[in-house]
Length: 151
Image (cartoon, rainbow, N blue to C red; front, side, top):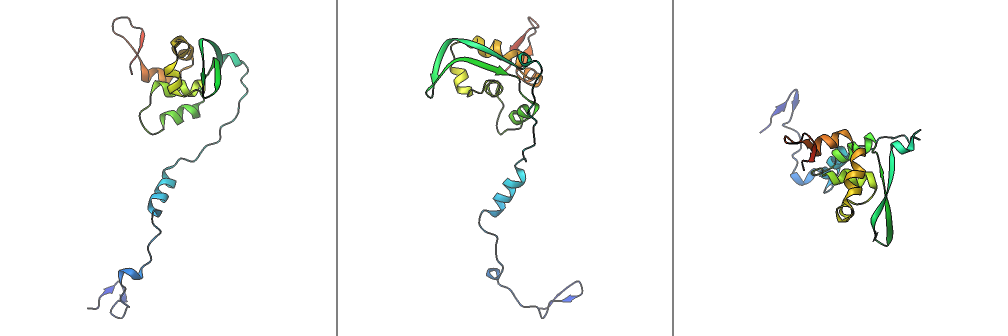
């Protein structure tokens, strides 16, 4: 029952049972795949913008609230960095307009949805929305030519 592989005569090779070959530790394949698939964090510079008013704006709430023991009387909206936009768009699952709002305000999207003062969210955040978010979530209507949320 001997055979050969290339120029090697396998007739005298020892026979191995499946138990003779060590297997990788359990879960090793999944761990390696997860490590290979996870993006490496990239360095992002901390910039000091010359016109801070162009990148942030503070809105006083008409209906202040308390969340997780912290009083919230105003919301600061800020423009997102390219890295933050990429993180939102590259995340798992479907992207929601409130993913952008949450990143722009540093408040959870569930909190933003619970606000009674929707003007802060829509009017306050809209000028700071990245162009890609405007294209994704606001489409001109045929009737008015204005922007309306599309999702």
